[in-house]
Image (tube, rainbow, N blue to C red; front, side, top):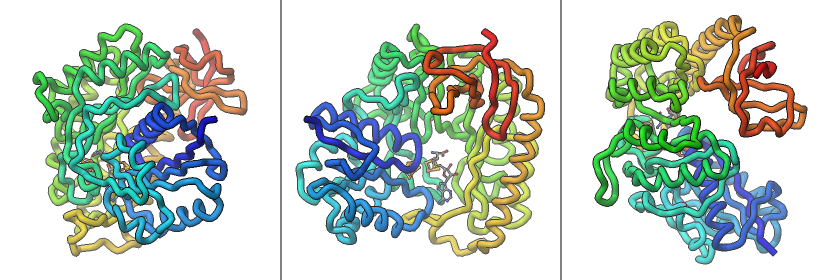
Length: 433
Ligand code: SAH
Ligand code: SF4
Ligand code: F3S
């Protein structure tokens, strides 16, 4: 009989994919299958995120709950980015934890399982050529890693300390993985990396010279593959070649994530982002001129140390000029082992909250304005999710979530849908073709 594993996944799409990789390895090599009930699990994994400060105590209180109510002889493993930076401290504070597995050591999952109190958190460990077993939680959309780690040194960010230096995954491994996924029914792939448009800068072995454009071109040759998405590109690497390939390649979905962080050039410099307000706006202009239907999403951090009222207004100004389709906004959160942790000009919490509210209100205005023109529009939707209430949902090429009444017959299918009603982030429609 197979054993059961329960995984709680926090954080970004990379963590989602890491959890799929762990499940795949555990299934193939140790005969585990997944469960959604931790009380029946033989193994409980928490795949953690450290990007903002959710008090570490929250991880420990959660571990306490698992420990109290779990099956008697089941094991607990802490994985992911917090595992990388806290390491053995986790076992010191919660001695019932059986192992700690860092974000860059995912391939060791079946090994640490058998070593009492194992701590594997080496951020120099290179698993860019490791062939993981196959498992995907969705048949219709396949996440595929194209690099590990991050070479940027954004002063606020802990990721380079939890995932190490950036190494690209060899082109043939990515293309083969995409072929396997599409042969099993995925018509859409989602390429993942912290800096996808820096692809090809460094491989661990010898590799022909390639870049992200070449990767997109090679993947587009797969006949059964219809849509390619990716995250996150970095504005610094959005050169003309990248924007031209993005715009002209019909398989590349016309939805771009452009993480602004701040609209003020001095703050961007303090963050070490490598671009200015003007460069960002120029890239948006170029993108929109080549690709008028593109949707643009972004990440914004408010109240970075030293950010004055006037500097914050530049972020609002960029928002007004761009009118982003989606905004993920955060208050700056000091992270251990980062440069900005030592910056002393802290912005007062009430000012930070007020700035975040202004960003969110302005974004809501932009969304309401966009939505007010949506009724009657027709989008080609790829359906990927079924709900209990008789609806299925999917996304348009430019990443709008659209629901229709229907059943699993639509999953993995494309349809033309006309929008009939609107809620803030979800549009509902009817199939016309
Ligand atoms: N590599 C991606 C970002 C990954 S982290 C990129 O550069 O786009 C996702 C987002 O979390 C970042 O874009 C940033 O907006 C936010 N973030 C990272 N560190 C943060 C911190 N210390 N405080 C608040 N937000 C942070
Ligand atoms: Fe963090 Fe910057 Fe790397 Fe993104 S690019 S993961 S924000 S260091
Ligand atoms: Fe992702 Fe969080 Fe790590 S955002 S890279 S899981 S710190």
